[in-house]
Amino acid sequence: MPIACARRCFFAWILFCLAGADSDLCLVQLQTALTSSGEPEVEPIPGPPVWENGIHYLAVAYHKSGVDLMKGLLQDIFHALGAPDEALGRWIRPCYPLSCANFAAPARVLLDMYTPALEAEERAAAPQGMRVAGSVRDPLDMVASAYCYHVRGREILNVMALTPLVMFMDVQAGVDFLAGRMLQLVEDMAAVFAAPANDTHRVDYERMTGSSVGFDVELDKLLTFWFEDRLTDAEWAAALSAGRRQDLHRHPPKDHRGLLHTNSPDCMAQARLATRSIPEDLRSRYQALRRRLGYSTG
Image 1 (cartoon, rainbow, N blue to C red):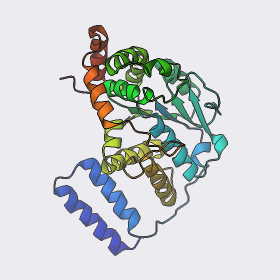
Image 2: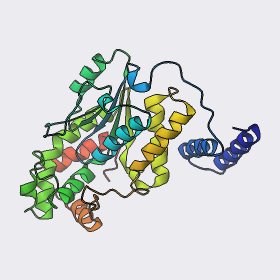
Image 3: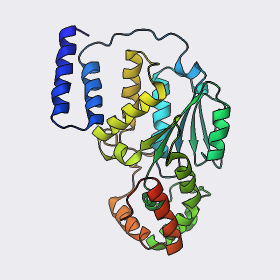
């Protein structure tokens, strides 16, 4: 990049930050300015590609905490870096037909199954270390989203949600039912991500889906956590561009039939209201988990 351009970008960033902007946003804006103001200087990084460096890269999610988000991020980013299909794995509990592959792959998506016990197993099996990123969402919003998703008949064979039953439940009955069914998943999520280890990164679902600016902040954190200084400028730009394909505001999600994947705002409003009236013993457990994860319970 020309020196004059670099200086202009740098001083523009200083003025932006002095104006009181969010510190995370400052870093993202600086990176965007530097990478968009000219051709990146490609300097080879010594050693093998990231999927062959011995580090285990994991994308973790729990039902309705950001499953499609984490799955798409890992697949799009590693494919953009040149990883072949056999270097990418996916696993879900239970393992539905055609839903699991390459469990020993160096980069994997783990869904509805990542517990402290599995965390210890993964760490022991990764002599060069691991980088685990997991999407965390407000537990009661996960329940509300699950109801609005399954009442439409989505994932008809889901054995956790028992979708054929939920389809015939009103909003309160369905929310109560799913709150009980999902409790163990939420407990697993809190056990790993309430106070994550140094090799584990919490992705903020609400921030990542709230706006494209928030998405870019979280994506920058994720790429930095996964790869640190292991990518060339060109590889970083490719990973950033690929990751942005998962931004719901830039690219509204659709299923294989071309239908919007997201729940209706009306259903979500009703389901969120219903979470306030789930059985008291169950609600108290959810509130404790929300506090543990840093969500307000007021």
